[in-house]
Image (cartoon, rainbow, N blue to C red; front, side, top):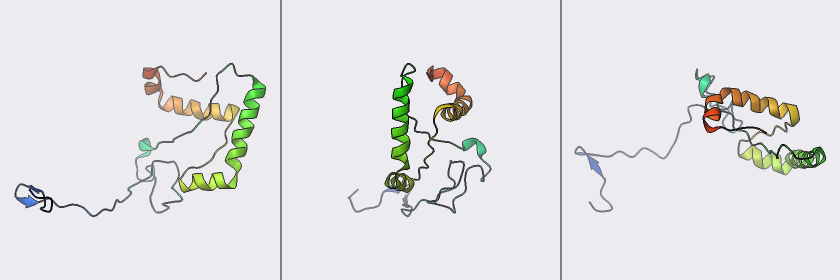
Length: 126
């Protein structure tokens, strides 16, 4: 087969689809501002496929409170910067500066949902 000939299967030429992709749903809890016409998996009747991706900064359990407070403030301040928020927004990322009990609650909800995987891998939040 030369470089220019089309590959064949069963005697007919292989049809290459147009280089377009149609989004069926987003897995986030809310529609994406970058694709507002694309429904969520929940809206499509597939709530179990909803996935939340979290980026969390953690420190060792023994980290002194004053150091945690400085780190926490630095991260919250950085994420509050308009240019940082704009950059993250272009990546379809939403900033939620959850700290302390709020962060633990969110992680606990995720742990409950993904408990079997977490248990199988012996993952721990300390």
